[in-house]
Each structure stands twice: as structure tokens, then as C-alpha cells.
Image (cartoon, rainbow, N blue to C red):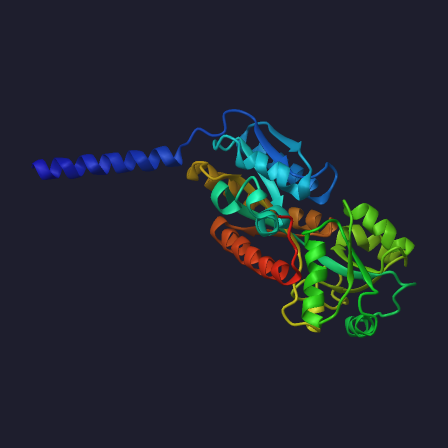
Amino acid sequence: MKIKSILMAACVAFTAGQASAQDVKYPTKPITIVVPFAAGGTVDIIARMVGEHLQKKLGATVVVENMGGAGGNIGVNRVAKAQPDGYTIGLASTSPLAIAPSLYGSKLQFQPEKDLVAFTQVSQVPNVLVVNPDRIKARTVPELIEYIKANPEKVTFGSSGPGTSQHLAGELFQQMTGTKMIHVPYKGSSQMVTDLISGQIDIAFDNVPLLLPHVAGGKLAMLATATPKRAEFDPKVPAVAEFLPGFEAVAWHGFIAPAATPKPIVDKLSSEVREFMSLPETKKKMSELGAVAVAVPQDEFTKYIASETARWKTVMEKANVTMN
């Protein structure tokens, strides 16, 4: 009888534990989504879309806080150092989560794998290879490779800054083709695109939403996408990978929270965000932004970040790219 009583007590305790995990009183106050970039960009728009959904579904106010700087590192550090209670989360991107750890090393104030839980990937934004049509006459990837090989260290490629996905796309392209170009970094994409159009630089890899209007207007020529296969926004445009198997340089975004955030809260947020990203109207809106909506769960997203971190670390080591 004594053993039976102990077993019954254990079952009651286990059941109570399950109930407490499932019935967490959350949220009971406003939730802040930190966007580590300026207002008005793709990441900011996605965060506000998700915020509206969470506000309706969870019944709590959701505030978007823009905190740009250092390629997204400042805003992500704000999330990493926040109270792990589910009331401060963030929407981060490739640079701070997969590139910054290798780029900054010990100077980085947070370590994604230790200080953060990446609970849902929500988007991929294709990078595309464009050229100034007056300076570069090549209109295919093979023609461009041939031209750069014939003019080593004369062709310039721009980026929105050292260690960004745009910069590393150019480095990867050089490594896979055996070519040599000159990297011209900027403090953001806007000035880089302005100089690309005016002919101050020759080529660039950058996000399709920013470049597509200039391609449509004939100011830039789009040669290929940096996606693993042809992108949905225009299947007629080839992927670089068709000529350089394995080439990939896409920007991606996902939600993060402080590492010690209770799992029931993380699971709840992940479920709600993935539900929203799977809606047909969300996919349509994301497509209009030049992005692809995805709803990747925590375990899969964590593995993806680890693989991206390792891949870009290799590229940076070969190119001797560092901020240390």
C-alpha cells in the first residue's frame, strides 16, 4: 500500500507539472519585438505583421522597437541581455546570427548558441547578382566570369558593409570561380546601389526587393539569383548555382528570445508565429515584399543557423575577413 501511495503521489505531481507547463499565464503585459534595423525595411515590416497577429491571438499589446547599428548586433544584444520572460523577443537576420560570431570573435557581446534561443525562421530573401549595364557588358554568369578572369582586380563589387551576406556572396563567388575582384564596402545598401547605378562600382549581390525596380527601369542588369534554385519571383532568371553548383547566398530572418526563456512560452510563441507565416495571405504579402514566407520550427532553425555559421566561417577564413 505504501508503494502504491508513493506512485499515486508521483503521478499527481507529474500531472501537476504538465498542467503548470501547459497553462502558463502568458502574456500578462506588453510584448516588445526588437528589430535590429531601421524602420521601414523588410525586417521591420515582417515584425509589424507578426506583431499584429500576436496581439490579436494573445490579447496583449505588442510593440516594435527599432534598434539599428553594427549590422544588427546592437539590437540582438539587447534581446540576449533582456529578462528571459517572453516579453522581449527579436527578429534577427543572417549577419548577427550566423556571420558575426566568426567575424567579431571575442569582441561580440553575445554568442547566439549560448545567449539566445532561435525559435522560428520566418523568411528567406533572395540575393541577386546585378551589374551596371554600361560598365559590364556580360549578360550571363559564364560571360561575367570570363570577363573578370580577363581583368583581374579591376572589377569592383559593392556591399552594404564588411561581413554582410552581400559581401560574403562576392567572396564566395571569387573563391568558386578563381577570380579576383576589389571589394568596396558601404555603410548600407542605399548608397551602394546609388554608386552602382552611377558607375562608381561594377557589380553587386543584394536583396531583390531593393534592386528589382532598378532592373525593371534598365538601370541595372540582373544576371542570376543567389538562391539554390531559380527563385519564385521570376523563374526565367537562372540561379548562379546552375553554373557554380553549391553556390548559395540568401538573407534569412527568424525570431529569437533570451536563452533562459521558459520552454512553454517559447513553444507558444513559435506555434503562433508559424501559424501566421503559413497563412495564404501572409505568403502573398511576403511575396510582394520580395521575400519567401517559411515556418521553420525551433530545432530545424537551430540546425540551419549552425550550418550557415560553419559555411560562412569557412568563406571568411579563406578570404581573411575579420573584425578582430
